[in-house]
Length: 280
Image (cartoon, rainbow, N blue to C red; front, top):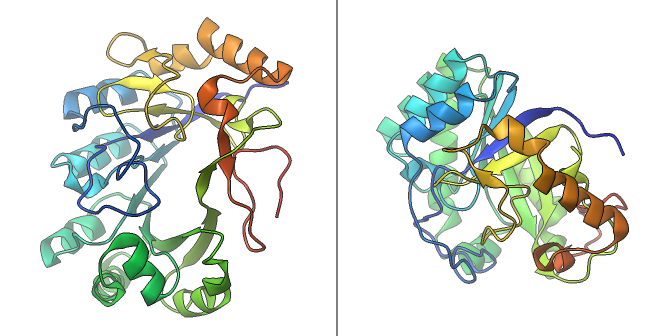
């Protein structure tokens, strides 16, 4: 099977969060220490990946809690990274924060909004009206000063919330530039290889806040360690022996424990992300 070149990274600015969402492993399940990626580590990761085109500046946790996040955006942009993407829960969009976002080189900002106001309150524990107001104020500012900043929302769909999808798309399409629906991660048997290991859309690895490199964001406890970005350039880890062994195990159907129980819920409105055979 062809392996695409490594051109994308998921960066974890932090695995801490100011919310405790019901479906998130930060709330329950994550056992590794909490912390924040240093600016020095971030610079090393970028410097070690000269062909880097795309950075997702979020993983587990709220990225805007990292005090260096905007310096990270600037450094990556100046290094030639074309696309800088960040997902946020939208709770920290003070006037100062909105200004910094619009003035940064961020390409895409997405907000985690899960269904109706009732669903959002149940899942995330905060009022949707406050987040919606933050988003509207950011949109007003970016339309005046940097309309090319793309704004979107992401709905993590559960088995009992997919009915919200139609109304959700209709409402949020009037507010933001794009709407994304994704299935919730659940425990369940894997039946085929994971395309992320080969480059589903492009070669991609995950760098956690402490430099640990893993093959997939689903591995929230970092059980599939490939190495550490402090010690080894990330580009080398993409084609290192550990990745070759992991790919071979997937092709043979002998999955590590974390991969063997990797599943996503099935709903009529979402497609699975981490499977070649996509169910709806």
